[in-house]
Length: 381
Image (cartoon, rainbow, N blue to C red; front, side, top):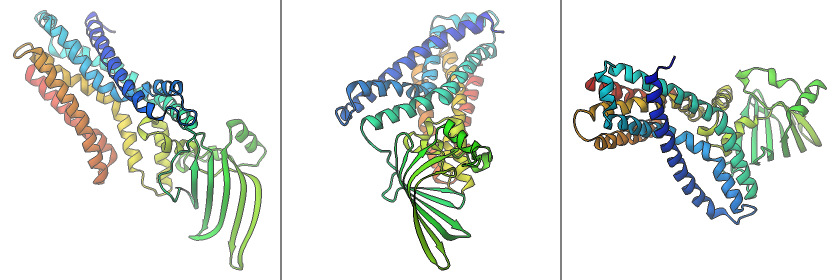
């Protein structure tokens, strides 16, 4: 159970962290809105929609700024206790440094729960809805990044997608099916629309679609069904090629909309579950998954980063009681926090470029700064 000491220190850190986070998110929102003003007036993108889009992106900004806010909040909260000699009184009363550290880490566990829930359940939904709102208002289609379109592999089926709409409707796609490395069939499709859960369930019950949803995670969670329009089949056989057209068809082996989320939404803003689905899909089709794996491990390590930020603040708070001003120590701590962000970005990207395991690239900066925090605590203990 939480003691009076735990609650007192926790309230001090929580209040200043919330204030810092609110300030940082507000500044990020202002700059984000200013950037959106350039697009106001295009299509149906009005000022009210730009404001709505900015509000929807606030959870994502809060998630990105959470760890720096925890560091600054901890420095300010604990620094205030140190300046008021409250920490000195605690230690004079027989409370050990380890006991104070424990109280801080208990608060850190709460922060870990908050950032995990925010990143897993709130940010993916708000970011996806925000991008859909913006693209629809601007009457834009999701860019696929190259003139040749987006290529997706599913077993022996290769799919070339011309355009992905905000609602994941696929426009101008071609399906290439191979049989033992030989092209057996190609299908030009004008449009493919993902079925709703009810439509897919009814199609499975009627026997129109196989139950692809129960085929296992190793093959990736494909959508349970797609409705294809205006199909032009070309079947290749030893005697030649045969062509015919079909007005409408249901199929179940196309790529999941969860995988397509990575086109319009940054991998860092996807949930761990969606990232695992994308990694499974890429690995099942022998595709490079390191970038998505890196985003997955960064997502997993983010809650632990808040704990490391708390521990980084402690040496500067304790040492401020012995020498130097508290403001100077807090400034050094802030610089160390900025250094963590920069080193984290640098090492993760260098690891990705040099072929290091994504998990190692994500956790290496965390371990490095954790060791710095532990050494600092040992010096001031």
